Each structure stands twice: as structure tokens, then as C-alpha cells.
Length: 555
Ligand code: GLU
Image (cartoon, rainbow, N blue to C red):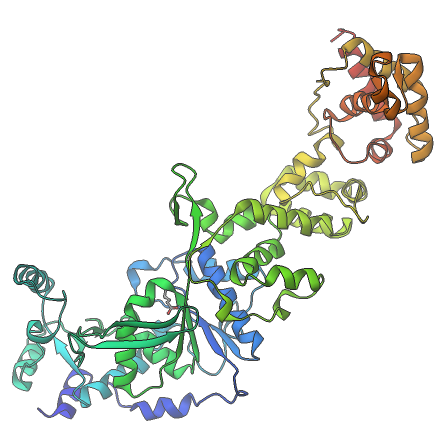
């Protein structure tokens, strides 16, 4: 058959050859060893945590080698696409300050290897496809879905070694030009298939950077390259795009390992250099119900979507920092030695990635987050929590922004010292954390530890009300509390209490607990002296007197 004629019959509108694109997208002028990576999501309307993990791997790999990272949108599968899909992905990345060197961004796209959206690259795919037809490496297939289903049935019955379109099962593989021409004239839909040369007992090998040498059966399937609408399949688009974008390292999810033999065969058929592959592990979790390890699921786990972390107010650096610990196990040592360094200066190494699934651990993320927030100064905390509240908690936003000075003072309690408190892991927790400082949020709660009865509590409060002065410095404040102790049967000296517990009702800690509960409704708070200073005498007196009434049974 004259394959040139076939090529013109099938793709008459394609007037370029691959050489045109070879020239348009030249081999990149980058330094030796620099890696070119791409993150290639489908616009499914949300960014999966595993996607953020993958994108971070791409960006770090490129940065660690002075290379290039790209964001490419893979929208050839219209069934998976949703309207605002790309925006959700870009939102996800910008929430975590992750940016690619090239590709799709808020302003459209940047870079010399675009377009970076697959649906805009159809001419490239069809040009390569036409070349494969000219070389006899691709052919049209007119089989209907019914015929393909019947084929699978026959294969099962006859015990074919593989299911699918190949070898003697591939009905359209050897159609004559005349048959093809007739079908086309009749308007029969067709797909373009790869004419595989793989042997049933053949093997392929490839080096996966994360997993080492992988041996797999060679591809025998006559894979679809172009669907009946002329749009490529993932497999073919991957080969064309990563060739013409001059990707050096294809880092993608492990679910693609099984397709790699197809891709190797296609790269070879096209005469392209095979990129290096690194198949990343899945992000897993322990199922709360049955304790098994499973994939993070979009349906079952809210934390599968990156937006969950934004909405619940994890600071962006906490999630990135946490993902880094999953990416390279030496990250934590590096962090200890480089406390303030930018995360992207970490010498990331793909080879050090674990090949087994990474277990997502909310507790560890929470710890990391608490540490990060604990060392922020009050101004930063104020800014970050206000920005979060503006979007997600109107009431909190109005309280914080109506009196920034008060809010900053509250957030400054026990901060910027060598042992800062670690109460807050996410901005959504701030409301509860500061609630007793605002009457709009404060809920009285007068429960006391068991060793203190209401009568003693009322006496402590009555005594304290006479002396309290919100402007006292810390020493004076504490001395006043100590002075209260003995006349009421408590000791100012904790040690003394421990030595002789029967001689006292309690110690100075118990006395302050009563005052703390009366003022905040809690037994554990940050520095009480600072709380009193911010609440001010009027509010302190009011709360103390309410508490006293309660303990006296008057309310
Ligand atoms: N679009 C593919 C996906 O959504 C990307 C695979 C790849 O990175 O090559 O999984």
C-alpha cells in the first residue's frame, strides 16, 4: 500500500511534517544535568493532595538542578473535565505559593514550548500521527464498540494470552487502501491505531529513578493514538508533548507504570529519545473504620482535596513542610540544621523517595503546623488569621479587624520567647482560642477542679476583687495573689503544700485556677496576667462578680 496516499486520505488538513515542530521547539539550551519536568493534571475541578505532592516533586527536581518545571493541562478526556477545572488547580497552587517556570498560569501561559493545554496542540499530534501513517506504523480502525466487545468475548473464550486489539485479533490491521477509502467515503468513524511490533513473549526494561530497574512484558497492543474526533489518547499525547516540550524527567503517579511499555514502544516508533521515568508512590491513609491502609479518596476523605487545608486554615508552609517530610526522609535532619532556610533550597533527590505508599498523618501535620505558628510573631499571626477569617469566618473577621490593637495584644501573649506555646494548628482554631477575650464569644463556665469547693472559690474571688488592678506589673500581680493565700487557708508555697498537704486547702496554683476559671471559663490558658491586662479593670470586675454570685449560689 502507498502509505503516503493513506496519510493524505486520513489527515488531509495536516500540511506540516514533524520537522517543523522539531525546529519550533528546539532542544533546550540548559546546563548539563538540568532537569525539565512537568506536572500534567487533567482539569477535573480540584487539586488532589497527591497532585500537590507530585507537583512539589516536579518543582523541587527542576529547582535542585537549575532546570525547568512546567504546568501542562491534559484536557483530552472530555469526560473528566469540568468547567472551572483549571482555576481550581491554579487556586490550589497559588494557595501554597507553588509556581512553575513555564506553562499555564493566571495570565494564560508562559514559555516557548506551548501551547501548554493539550486541546490546543491537536495539530502537533496529528502531524506526528500522519508521519507514523506514512511510515506504515499506524492505521485506521473502523471497529464499532459492539465489535470490540464481541472481540473481547471471543478472546476470553479462546483463551487469548492478552485481551485487546492486536495481532490476529486486529481486524483492521491489514485492510487494503480501497477498503479504507470506501469506509471513509461512507463516512464511517475511525480511530487511528498504532501498529505494534511487540512480541507476545517479549520483555522491556526501563530504569525508574525511584524504583530501579523494572522489567515488564513488551507492549503488543495496537493502541489507539487518535480517537474518532481526532483527539489523541493520553498515551500518544504524552509521547508527543514530552518530546516537543523537551521534558527530561517524567515524574508521574505509579498508576502509569503499567502503561510504560506502550510509551516506550511509541517513543521508539516516533524515533524520539526516551525520557527518564520516576513513578511516585500514592498518598495513603489509615482507614478510620477498619484500620487498613488505603488510597486517599476524593469521595471519602475531605483532606484528599488541597482546598480542605486552605479552608480549615492550615498555614501554607505547614502543609508544604509536611509533604517534604514524606518526599525525602532526610528532610527533617536538613531542617534541624537549616532552621530558617527556604524549603526550595533543600537538596531534593528523587532517588531518595520511597517507592511504597506514603502515609498521610494528620497528627504529624498538626504538630508541624503548631510549631510553625508558635514561632510566628503576633503581627504575622494577626495578618494570616485575619486574611483567613475574611473568607471563612465573618464574625471572627469583624472582631479581629474592628480592634487590631487588642487582637494583636491577645495573639502576642506567650509569643516571641524561647518556649512559645503551641496551641494553634490552624487558623480556624483561633476563634476558640481567643473566645474568652470577647464578650461576643465568651461562654461562662465555672467548673472547678475537684479539690476546690464553691465556698472557697467565692472567698478567693471576693478577696481578689479588692486588690486586682489590671495595670499591675507581673510581679505585683503575683504577689497580690500570694498574699491572698494564707488568710483563706491556702499556701503561697507549692513545695510546702506538697510536704504537708493536710495543713492546707490547696496552694497558690489552686488560687490562680479559681481566678482563671472566673475570668476565662477555662483551667488552662496563656499567661493570666496578660489576659487581665487586656481585659481591663471594668471587665475583670464584672466577670469576677458574676463568678462570685455563681459560687454563692446567687445565680
Ligand atoms: N493527566 C495525567 C493524570 O491526570 C497525567 C499523567 C502524567 O503525568 O503523565 O494523571
